[in-house]
Image (tube, rainbow, N blue to C red):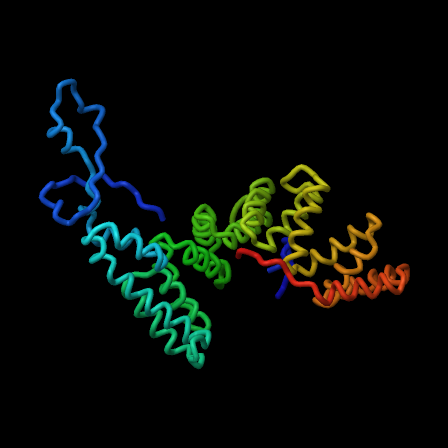
Length: 340
């Protein structure tokens, strides 16, 4: 994987309470009624029966509105929402069916559950899920179309998912615009920003790169650094590496050796080869010879050729026992899991 993530010029649902009127005749749906006094209309001595007309009954939510709200729900969220009341259970049935098609699509795509990989069957399953309103299925169908070379249909599905508020759809649509010929950077920034605000760490990283490079927007180093940090805190390894560089060079952030070292180590411990190389150099400068050799060895094994020269110099200064110990640690090393 290309880990040259520092930008160079040459490098290319939550429920919302809606004010729907309540009709007490709909209580046979067994929905939960939520009451809230209307302060402006309340008067001393007003009867309880007249005040009850101001409550919100979520069973009155139109089916099309409910399915749009729930379009990017996962199966556990759909199951929970379906327990609210009968009208919700009935309205969400197509989305629950979409989850079954989504599961089968993933099995066909990745060859799971004893099935042979079959992109065409995977696409058929994803499209059936998408037809039932699931943005998760729309995004997966878009990915398959993209892999098959039909980028237009892929973008069409990404856009549909993005407009329904799916962060992964917004991310993929934004990246599609960045990769278009010619790129539509203005639209890309719009969708990347929406996905970033929704918490998608890859979108936060991509948005930070655009802000760092001044691509489609005015160059803004403090804002770029803020999004790098957000993505790093969310577990995105490349953002950890770039956040470290921001602290090292004082780009958008106040210089801090401690913070730079912290994020470089976190990226290195999660398998970022450039971070392993640079963290190894940092350990060498601090006199931590054996630890430096471990990280430099890992970087060298991952393809960082420059790490080999430094590693060989340090190894000559270690005892045979320390060399053997360092090689054993490198061989037994496993990357820390990343949530993303």
